[in-house]
Length: 251
Image (cartoon, rainbow, N blue to C red):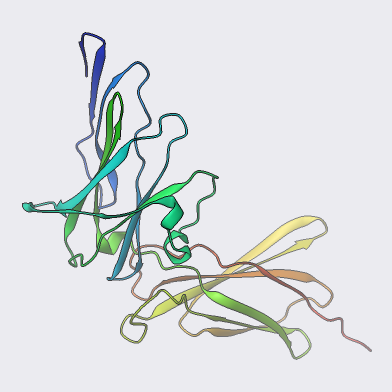
């Protein structure tokens, strides 16, 4: 729906549906003169259930906003509206931006503390420009956006003639590991006659796994991801790759 008032065009797009509690666009609204600015696109995740929840969005190239207004509330409690803690791109700690950005755009972050379990939330990010504003309204439940940071210190070492020992450490940002343990998957890749091959193993509840029957003389690449033990949310991004060549068996 678009309405023109003099030289100002007001555009509203309503998308009123939610599937499985996932974070979805619910409302986009723009009021601008000339070409409309970009709407903030939100990505929310919980890197340490239930304590660390962040949302991020890229700073637009075309229309740098003058400022952001960020609020969140419980879906069924309008009186619970609170302001997010805004973290500008230049102030984002590395642990908070590990939800990797594949672009060179600067990311803004919004920290949501003390969220309740099993509760639907709505977050609203409004970018204010000199000629108007654009908003992104999204809904999520904490349990649906759990995504640990990647495991660290992945190590691979030969073990016996055709075996490898793969070990790693849990993501340091995941609190309460004794109460809320993680499970892990191992991805390893190699080339065979010029063709890429890969195997995804797991889940494993330990942080050390022996892989057997690998091919001597072949070069392998290993990565590990972490997920909440009961399966909440999704697996982390893959860890940094580690490569090793299986020693050849000498006669």
